[in-house]
Each structure stands twice: as C-alpha cells, then as structure tokens.
Length: 456
Image: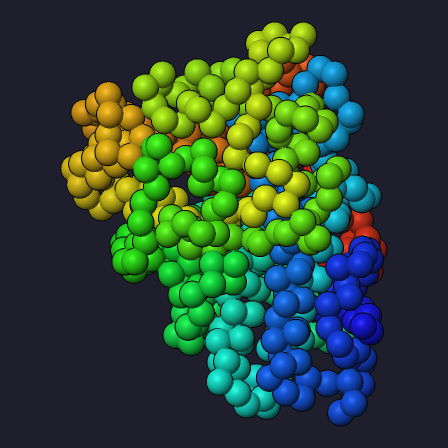
C-alpha cells in the first residue's frame, strides 16, 4: 500500500508520522494529477476510512480526548506511585507550548481534518450509490474534530477571549497559513456542517457516524452555545429510535457498546487495530497494566450505594490516601470507545429544559434516575439547586467519557483537586492554563497565528 502524507492547511500538521498514515491506495501530491486522484467510489470509501483512522489515534479518541478531561478536573488523579504518564495534564504542566501532549493532539486533529478536506474536495466529481453518504460522513467527522479543538484550544462560547477561536481549513492546500477564527465563527461552521451532513446520512453502522449521532452532536453543540431550544429539539430527533441503557446493563454495555441501541456513534477497535497495550484507555484507567490513574474517592462517594453506577468502579489497594478507584468502563486494549450515546443526549435535553421549562426538566431528571439508575433516588429542588443536581447527574453518568473538563469550562467553574494532589491543585477558571496553548511549531510556521494570552 502506498503511503499518503498530508501537508495540510496548517503547516504545523507535519509533526506526527506513524503507520496510521498508510490508509489509502493512492498518493495525492501538490499537483494531484489524474493518476493519483480519487477517481471512483471505492477509492472514496478508502479515503473515508482514513478519516476514521485519525479518530483511532491515542491522541484523539484512542485515549487523550478522554483522559485529559478527567485528569484536569476533579474526577481522576495520578497515583503517588506512577509511570509519569499523564502527569502533565494532572499537574497542569501540559501548558508548555513547545511540544508534548497538547502539540500532538493539535497535530493529529488537524491531520484528520485535512483527510476529510481532501475527500470533500472531490464532491460532485464521483458517482455511486454511497457517495452522498460518504461525503456527509466526512463533513460530520470534520465538524466533530473542530468541536473538540475549539473547546481545548479556545475559551468556551460566550466567555472571554472570543476572538481567539481556531483556524478552519476548508481546502487541502499544502502550506497554507490560516488565522484564528472567532469562537462564534467556529461554532457556526460546526453547526452548519452537521446540519448539512444530516441531510444525506443513510448508514446505520454505529462504528460510522449516523444521522442520529449527528443530531446528538447538534444537541451538544447548541447546548454549549446556550441555544437551549435548539439543543432540546435536536435531542428529541436523536432519541427517536434510541433505547436508553438500564442500570443492570451498565457493566456489560461498556464491554461491547457498538452492539447496543444506547450508542449513537463509537470508535471501533479490534485485536489487530487498537492503540496498543501501553496507550489504550484500558492501560490508563484499569487494573492490570499501569494502574497509575484512577477515579478519586470524592467522585466515588458522590454515587449513592443504591445507584447502579457505583458498580462501575472498584477500590484499589495502594498506599494512596484517599484510596483510588479503578474504572470499569474500558474492558480491554481493543475496547470500543463511545463518542456519543442516547443517555448523554437525554441529559443534554434535561439541561436545556432547565432554561426553558424547569418543571419539565425536574420531571425528566427524576424519572430517568429512578427508572434507569437508582430506584431510591428523589429530588424536588428548584432554581440553582436544580441546575446543580442536573450537572451532578451529568458528571456521574458521563464520567470517564470525555465531558467533565468541557462542562466545568462552559460553566466557568473553578477546579479543586482531591487530597492526593500536590501541584496546581486549585485551578480557577480565570487561570490562563484552563485553555491549551497553540503549539510552538504552529506559532513558528504560521505567521497569521496568535498565541493564547500569557503563554510564551
């Protein structure tokens, strides 16, 4: 198989090379002559596999998109005896623009966008039964990467520094320098591309993005944008054919999420195609490999003893005080990773309803927890107490699935780490490190790029 190497819309994309680049049977160049271009439906499908391949990277959904969310907040921590893995995130020492984890996350994300842009550059030129769906998938996946980038490398929508969003590549041009768009412009691009993709998506394979998944992602994007009516509307569309997960199904669900009607979209891994024994989420959070990152006791104690979610965590016998709790959401090195599922979408709707119809939000919340998680649950508060409870249930339900950091940022919540923490344990929203720096290689090669405040 020939290797396709992208020099994409932002020069900083050249930072990573791996076997994951070997994903097409043709090799486009700057000239892209007829012998190296996409010419048929089969090659288009191969190019689309390359976009999905990017999502499998351990710097995206293979690990970092999930682990960074938990270790930078109050859900997870790095144990006293550790292998130095992820300590940069946990101690907020990831905030070094010269390279490291945050640079690799940026590079792999924009490389994946570049793959999608290359595929989309052939729109209108290829014929076939699945072509419209393929282009729609690429458009939706590109929007999802932009969503994660703007929430890691820019401040949350509607807060501060709103002119400092991220670049939005639209062409697979080699060496093109691009400026940062505003956060609002990035959200407009994300939403418009997801809405356009939803019109043509027809596949039902949950290892590939579906129409229902796109509706769910739109509910997430509109929630972050604080457009609560649209968030609730798209949540209803996403939930139309979904089946909510019961409490007694939780442990088995995470071992095989792509076979469940709870899942709207997930990243498929196999025994031959996974992040590896050192880098997979299983190696990071579960007993049997490194055993150096875990859920905090404070988080574990938030879960009622009668709540089915309590069984997703197990105490580890270590010298740490308080004790760590292993996470049972990652069954093995080739475990599939959930990107969006029905219960998240329901929680998006409940949170949106708090701002438009709080009494309905309360009813939906209580009914869901009592029916699906904890039969002993009760709550009757209103106002701020109701919002706090909604966010608490969201925190418990979506823990270790890649949401906590973004949720704390969009509500401008200060972070207070647990008693095990020794470095940067209090991280107020105002601290410049609550947003990632633009990587140094990007700053050095893109004259139009502006660094986030206070970074060198």
